[in-house]
Image (cartoon, helix red, strand yellow):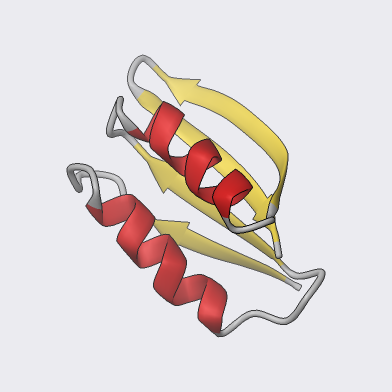
Length: 73
């Protein structure tokens, strides 16, 4: 299953906090697609994923200051 979490407009660390909460509801193997525009998230979200044993399957720039990252639980 793939779930989308849109955090555009939120400053860090809120995208990470919301991602943590969203992951609690997912099963192993599910993916969370996080949309964000907080520049710090380009480092904090992959680090959070690695710290929790999640796999980053996609990381894409979608605009001048916008990205999506897909994390598999």
